[in-house]
Image 1 (cartoon, rainbow, N blue to C red):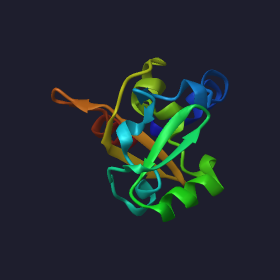
Image 2 (cartoon, helix red, strand yellow; image 1 turned 135 degrees about the vertical axis):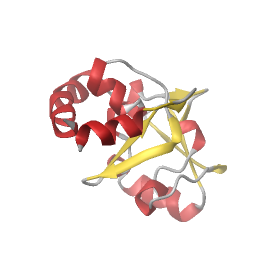
Image 3 (cartoon, rainbow, N blue to C red; image 1 turned 90 degrees about the horizontal axis):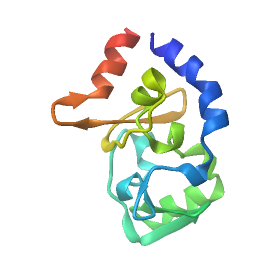
Image 4 (spheres, rainbow, N blue to C red; image 1 turned 90 degrees about the vertical axis):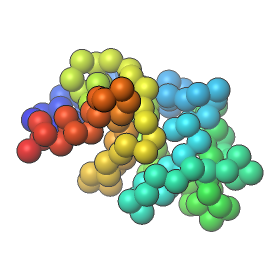
Length: 130
């Protein structure tokens, strides 16, 4: 099912989401979490002292090295679906906010998920993909 969701939303993600439509709070992507750290298996808060603007959205990083890594190839680190909940986009085509500590890295891509009020869409993503 997870493969079907990913495949069925590929077209949607390519046509519906530009980076200018990136989920952000007050112009800060991923609620200030360092997108490069997801590839180390960690959700790490960034620091405003190490920020980079990408297409009108600010990204925070934990250090200068991560900021530089991002700036060399930002497309390698951007969460899928504009940073909105991957499950909600795939299931209903709805843009839903995320909990930046709830994520999955699959095939070199970061997927973020809603996780609040007893609802963790990463669990649903994993359950339906099994």
